Structures are given as structure tokens and as C-alpha cells.
Image (cartoon, rainbow, N blue to C red; front, side):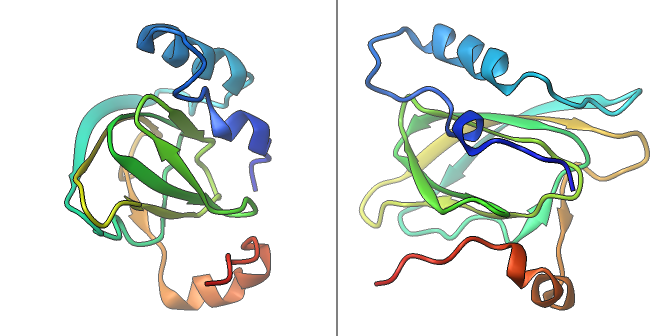
Length: 149
């Protein structure tokens, strides 16, 4: 499994007074060193989740992914890290590879959430690969404890 530091995955917060572009630049700087698969392709997408949408099912990416929350709040959880909420103006990243991305849904029940994500992908691999129930069960010991309530 690719090791990642949770302090890096948190990204820049929305209330540090910096313009959006400096937060995104800091996210890339703090993510170093990143492992980009040789010959990787890249894709940037806009994701929009309606209130309460749980987002994508558990999945992984073959390369790193970097996100910026435009509006709302994203419930974000990577394997081995506690679930957290990234609010508008905040950034997040994941290392890709073997790490499971459990959640990327809308943390709000009364408003839409929008974020962009740039994904780097190894040649011949899908941008997003779903993780089945059997694998989730086998790796359950790697998931951080779930919040109570």
C-alpha cells in the first residue's frame, strides 16, 4: 500500500485567508513526494452531489487525485485515516494505488456540494475502480474507526 500522511491529505483549510489558487498550489506542494505512474494520463472533472448524496461507492485510483471544494462540504475518507469533512475552499488529495477511497459524498443534508478533482491514471487502468464487498471485508482492519452517532 502507498503510504500517505494524514496531515498532507487534509490540504489547506478554507479559513486561512489565502486566495483559492494559493490553496491549490499549497496542496500540491504539501502532497510531495507524489508517485505518478509512468505514462499517466490526467482528467479533471466537476462533481456535483445533491443534498445528502453519499457519493461514489468505495473505490481506488491508479494514480494520485487532487480535489478542491467549490461549494458545500465533502465527507472524505481514505483507508487508514479518520473520516473528515472538507468545506468549501478546502482541498484534499489521495495517493492512489492500493489505497481505498471510502467516501466522497455530500456532508450536507440541506444544500448541494460541488468540487473539482484532477485524477492521474496509469496506462490501461480505469480512472476509478470500484472495490467489491469481499475486498472491503478482507481489508476492514485497515479502515479507521467510524465516528459514533
